[in-house]
Image 1 (cartoon, helix red, strand yellow):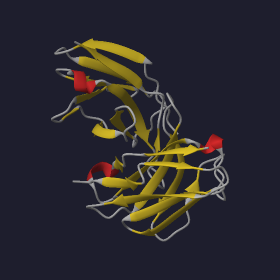
Image 2 (image 1 turned 45 degrees about the vertical axis):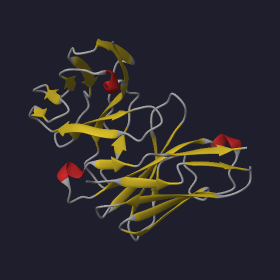
Image 3 (image 1 turned 90 degrees about the vertical axis):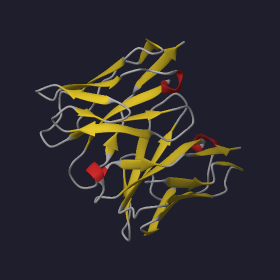
Length: 111
Length: 117
């Protein structure tokens, strides 16, 4: 199963873009990259996912490198409510499509 | 859409008793449900995967006789922690997936905090 590596923690000023990196160097060609976030004592919330192309939705943008070995989640204008743990996940494509969670990045948005 | 609920949200029980946690997909049919546990300041650890109508698949190191999983319908899965002990105290989270949905993403419930005295 592909593993992900993320920085343990990051700070970001309110209103600025938050760029959260993730390494997944052992990713296979048909494995998707998913991003979720977890606010304290809640279930994870889906943010975005992608395979090869960059993706954008109302919450964030996902930039995947051409070799697919790393990606960056971008929150364009971070707010205090974006303070959470952000998980980058490579979804297993065979069988049950399970997620293997890494340690995540604890993002703190500062006023 | 894609709402997943869990019940109860919080439970306290005595050591040696069994506790059942329900996970429901409210507005879609979940072909697969997953159960995770999370200790304080740690990441989510997958415990098992269940498909409707079949036996759950447990991750390595998870005792299937201690953590009983039943996925009797496309909207309900239950996790029973049998003979609970203080070391079973944790945050239990379920997720549900509909393979027909966008990208097969998982939708997570709000979690159940179990405290065993």
